[in-house]
Structures are given as C-alpha cells and as structure tokens.
Image (cartoon, rainbow, N blue to C red; front, side, top):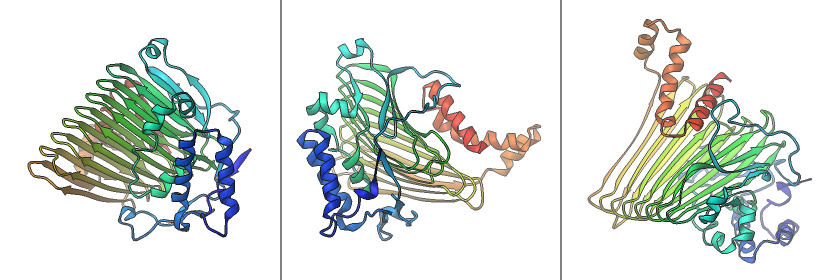
Length: 452
C-alpha cells in the first residue's frame, strides 16, 4: 500500500478542504504527542502557503536570489508515493567488497521503513548513549527529542522543501551522547530508495554533550538504476562545550532521482565540528548547509566532493554564521564536471557584531572535464565587526595539459594519466575522512561514477 503525495500536497485553499482532511486524518492515526502533531500541522501549512505546491511539483521563484542559476522547471511530485509496506527484497551492502566499517550502531531504512537495526553495546547504553530510530526516540524520550527536533533547522532557499520534510518525516536516527563520553566507532544509517516513485523524508538528529566524541555516517542510495525517487532529508547537529563531532554523508541515488537535503550545525564553545558531504547521484540535487558558531573558540570544517555527469545539476548553498568571538571555520567544496552537467555554489560567511577575532575561509574549486559542462560560483562575505580574518574565492579550470603531458612522457597511457590527475583532485577531500573503510568506499564510488 502507498499514499500518493498528490493526494495530500495540493495547496491549502477553500477549494480543497478534502485534501486538508486527508492530512489531518493521518495525524490523528499517528498517535504522536500533541507537540509534534502541532509542529507537523504548522509545517504543512507553510509548505502549502500561497499555492506553490501542487500535484505536479514545487514551483521555484526565479526572482529569489537564493535560487540564482538554478533550474526553474519545478521539482516534480507526480506519482511520488510514501510506501506503507516493508521492502521484501535484498538491500545492498556498500562495504561488502572493501574494509568493514567499525559500527557503534546501525539503522537501515528502505522507503522510509526500518528494515534492520544493530543496537548499541550494553557498555554504551550504561554510559547514557541513546541511538534509536527517530520514531522510537520520540516515544521513549519525548522531552529530549522535543527540545531539538525541528528547532534549529534553517533552509537557505528551500523553505517549502524543509516544511514538507517536517510535515512528513517518520524515518531517521536520534543520537544522544552524554558529557565526557567518547565513541570512536561510527554510527551508521543507510537510507534506500527501493520502490518506483518512492518519496523519502529522513531526518538525523545528533546531540553531543560537553567533551563528547561522535562519528556518524548517513548514506543515501537506490536499489536499482531505473526507479525514480523523491527525497527531502535533513540533519541537525548540536554540540556542547568541547564536543567533537565528525559527520559524513554520501548521496548516491540513481540518476532518475530528485534530492533535497538541509543540514544544520550549531557549534558550542570550543567545539570541533567537521562535516564531509559527497554528492554523486540524482537528476537534480540541492544541498543546503547552515552552520552557526555559537560559542567562543568553536572550530568548524566543511568539505564536499561532487561528481556531476550527463545532464545532472547539483545546487549547493552554504552559510557560515559566526556569532561568537575567536571561532574558526574552513570550507572547501570541490566539483568535478563531465558531459553537459552543471553545478552551482553560493556561499556566505557572516561575522556578527561581537564576533571579534573570527577566522573564516571559503573555497570552491571546479574542475571542468568537458567544454559543455558549466560551473557557477557565488562566494560572499558579510562582515559586521572589526579585527577579523576572512577570505573566500572560487576557481574553475580544466586539467593542466602540461601535467597530462608530463605523465604521458613517463610512459603512462592517456586514460591512466587522465584518471590520476582527476582522482588526485578528489584526494584532498577523501583523505580527510580518516576512516579507511569509508575512504576506500568513496574511491570505489568515484571510480564507478567515471566508469558509467
């Protein structure tokens, strides 16, 4: 059984009272706490306000600067469905041919339905660590979840996508690591689009207490290459003083999917937050990353690796918000473009009043591997304070013919020399992963993308 989104996503209007009744009936059947029901109802109204969502898609305002350079055809919702049945097939094991990933706990979803779970160890549970499916966490720890769920997320243009996500999200992970608890192994969550037209709304919440250590991996993939999927996901990272959080995310949906992701990080005093996002799949994909350095001495590192091919479009929007003094942020987004693909990068560093001695860096590097490919970059600064160090920039170039000639003069075939230079471009990001199993997986996925 499945629920067609077109049945519930038409505009809230006097002419469509039945559609609102369908959504309200779903809320009544959910048995969720009242506070969450109210949040979902408010989100649904925001998503439908002004008639911008219809059964065919989400309209994009061409005049909105936050969508500059992006395609404006609308994100089609036609035939998108939310599955009610558990996937009966076999899901891929992404680490089967490489090094096994050392997991502290694992969740696996197919079409937003939980299919497998590896709970945390008894030792971690005794230390107060909570790692649960989002729905289970809401039932067992409602006050802790309520304090953070949907409270910090900030869209950078995709307001209706995020509202739609908040109205319908059921799948996802909730991780809480108490003060002074260090977990070196990785918490791993896999989200699979398994059915034709699947609509996914996964959400990750990570809360790291003072001086806690957390490693986390979100993976988004498709079980086949032909089934369309519609994904609107989000992740929230909240850190206490001195916490260390390293989150990795991989978007590897098939080429017929549409993907929107909104990541938010709130960095406390002296916290160290690192995020690496890898973007490979989707016909069109938009990634929004908002980070707020909310405590003095916070350190933030944002890296992304994108490989675009065919007629793919990857739209990346970032915001580094410095609200506290003596904080540092460093952003590096690298895009490799083949065929007639497109990438858009628009980033902003904002230094708020009182955030003196800020040290912020932002760099977007684009490697064009075909003359028909197109990369647009819009790095920006907004400084409202003195005594700061902020730099930003963007580069777009092709492979250096002299480097290619040098390698070929040493006896390497053209294709081999070409691949060495391209994968060398990727390694600056991959080497920062630190986990060998994941680093090898990323190299494998990059090779597969070029192989196609």
